[in-house]
Image (tube, rainbow, N blue to C red; front, side, top):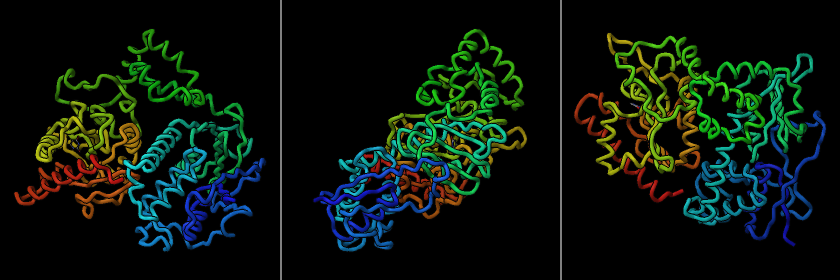
Length: 498
Ligand code: URA
C-alpha cells in the first residue's frame, strides 16, 4: 500500500520531505494528505511557532529527523546526500505551499525530488512543473498584496475585552499567516484578530496565535469603530478625481463587499456626477500649500489620461513639494522592468520618468545595448520628486529610507501587475527598494544577475552617477556596466534560467 503522509503546514511538509528524500522515496511511492485541526474554542488557539508533524501509522519512518533537512544551500551532488536546495527555491516552495490546490504538497515533493536528482530545469519557466511553480508564486504574491491593501480592522466596543480590533477577510489562498505577520509588525501592542472562513489569527500584543475559524462573516464583528471609519473614508474621497472604472478595476467587487466603505461608494459616485467634482477641486486642491513652479499651468498638468490613486498618495510627506506623483510607464506585459531612484526636476513637471538628462544617458545605453525602450517598463523606487531649493533651482535630494519604504507599496503594485522576469536596479536606492533591504548596496552586485523572489535582478550604476562621476575613464567604465547589465537583462528575459 502506498503510504500517506499527513501534513498540516509547510513546516510539516519540509520535515517529511527531507526524511523521504534521505530514504530515496520517489514521488509516485507516497501520497500526501492535509489534516485540519478542529479545535473550536477561542482559548484553544495555539502559538504559531513550530507546528507539529502528524505521521500516520502507515507513514514512512516514525518521526522526521531534526537535522536531515531540506537545507537552503548549494545543490546536492549525490542523491544520497541530504537534500540541499537553493535558498530562493525554498522561498518559492514556501510561497507555493499557500496556493490552494489539492495536490500542493505532492507537487512540492515532486519539485524537490527532481531537483535532488539533478533536474535543475525544474525551476525554469520553460519546464512544465517550473511554469506551474512560477504561476503559483505569482498568484500568492498578488493575493497577499490584496489582503494587505483591502483588509479592514474594525474597533470593538470599549470594555468588550481583547482583541481591540477585528477584521474579516475571504482570501482565495492560504496567505493568512504571512498577512498576520505583516500586521503584527505594523500594529504594535494593539490587540487584534483576523477571521477567515478557514482559520483565525490573533495578535495579543506580543505573540501571534493561530486557530480554527471563529467567525462566519463580517456580521460577527461587534463594530463600534465603523462609524469613525466611514467618516474618515468620506473625508478622504475626492470627487474631482473620481474614475469609476479605475476604482472598480483596482478593487474587485469580491473585496468591496467586505469593506465598510463599499456601501458608501454608490452614493458618492452619484454626488460626484451631480457637481461635487468641481467642489472637491476647489476645497481640496485649493487648500494645499504647494510650491510655485516657473512653468505654465498647462504644461504642468499630468500627461496621463486617467487619474490614479497614486495621485492622492500621502504615505509620506514628499507629495507636499512635488508637482505630481510620477507613475511608471511601459508595457504591462514587459519582461524587463527598470527601476530608478525618483523623478528629477523635469520628470516632476512632465509626469513621466526618465525624460531629463539621466533619461538621455539611459537612451544612449538602450541604443548601445540594442534594447527598445518601448519593450520595457520603466519606473522609480520613489514616485515623488524630493528636492531642496538652491537659488532658483530645485536640487535633487536622495530619498530617506522611510520614504523608500512608504513608496514600496506602489512598486509592489507595479511588480504584481507587470510581473517582469528581470528587474534592472539603477543604483542603490532602487536596489534597496526591490530587495526591501535598507542596507543593500550595488557594489558587490554590479552586473551579475541574481535571484530574488523568483525574479532575476541586475544591479547597475544609475545614469545620474554616469553624468556626475569625474573623469572620462570612470564615466566610460560606469557606462559599460550599465550597457552590459542591459544586455544581460535581455538574455535572461529571453531564455529564463528560472
Ligand atoms: N532619475 C531617476 O532615478 N528617475 C527619473 O525618472 C529621472 C531621473
